[in-house]
Length: 205
Image (cartoon, rainbow, N blue to C red; front, side, top):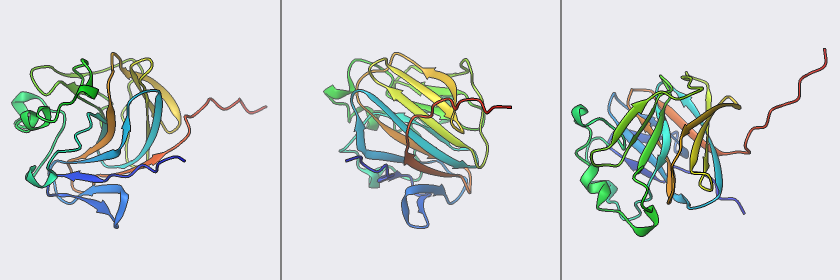
């Protein structure tokens, strides 16, 4: 039996389920909100999810935090942000949820920026990167972003409309959940479980 992927945790006051569907979220104003598929914890093996996007959201992985009080988060929530952006005040709250299953790996949140294609990650302390990667491409409204987490190899790869772009981040270990971030009015993300795309054979001329 395969679990459906749902956004069962919403963090921030201005993120909502789209049309009451708990597999789709949207931003109601220009304010940062985050959705987590917390019921689906990835501890080993390979896991693939697809995200249909509208606007300029972000999608990625984050450590499981089952005891996080979502009602106490406040107006906004962002898992990955630069210290100078003012979006890191929740980092101590996230780190307080640490468990042994996080492992020694310090990549606690990592996401794909759909607008630019850049990768961001943080250890919720002092380590933060916003970088490009080989094969990087941005996305736009109507595109489908696929993320492949391979915890046997420690990699996170990105697909765009069923086409593999490349490995965005390596060195990963421990447990993770899928997450999505919205920040502009109208940003929408719909998550679904899918088969890993394979290269289709060329059509005869």
